[in-house]
Image (cartoon, rainbow, N blue to C red; front, side, top):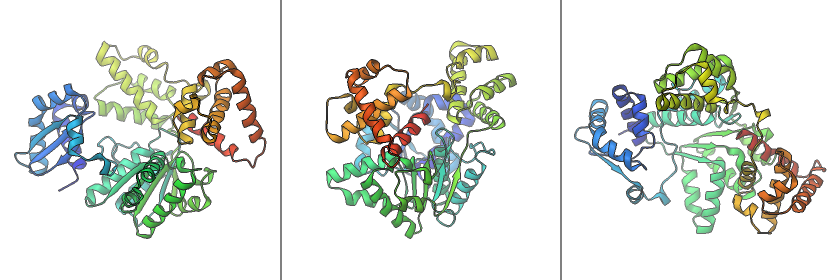
Length: 438
């Protein structure tokens, strides 16, 4: 039997042909498949309203799809709430797989000059895992499709190799799980989870840089998988040689296979992305509206898709005529260039806390231990450097007065005056992480 996620994706696609994409999105957008057997399909939905809709209206469509596609007869469909789902699946021992997602396949990835090479290498890896391009390292700014390619690789390999153990993790989550495993005395379980993968997918691997114990564990995990001829795919917002706080031995290994970059889409590609998204949502946009969006929404693909969804929502909920004047009014807050957009203090504090692997509220709190104090000083410096806040206003973000901020800024500036000081790398990395979120 195919994997549960693959079966569910096929069921959704079959129902979409009968019920239309907007209806499927409305009722199944947050539904997850828990388990599929020959006699039962178990779903989870966090919404009580959607659970009732699925139970009362959609079960016959699900059963029909299972019968038509997989010849599965008399399958009972069960829809669980969260407590029931948690009881069914022991989350503490469940591997974190990158689940098959019908929205993120190779067929739905819009290809153009800025991403053609990354797309081609991803297909090659999906067709011949661990035989070519191992590891595959995909890099580029946020929102351009790196995670889409990870999903596509996972889905394709899962289809051809349903027995594969496919494991996915984000860079910062790898650190958090390692810390938790050490606290709980479960380091053996942690290592087994990742070193027994057939396909190891790591999103935002840049977040392991600068974390000594994380890099040590990642180094041995990488070596084990590579020596056992298992496929490794990594994504990052920058190439390995620009990860200044990454250990040299990891930089070298990340470049053993092939690196592929993804650049922001050009005008023609943005038009194709808009048209593709409209088709998937069942939305028709006049050519002048498509051109207007393509000319003004230029930062990344995620922003383009969000724009189309917002127009669709306005049209459905208010009956708005879709013309350039109305669209311009609806999306005017979405097409400010990065040069016109300043990060919020909250974003800077959160990204600084994330970098130092701590909680943002601790940076605003009263703790004075060395690690928290250094992270707080960095956050204060960046709030002053990256926003227009005055010293008193910056101080209020940290529940402190302006003299504390001024002292922190001077300390960081003193450290930055020495080009050999690691603080230069820290500030650079956090600023890139913040800017990638704008």
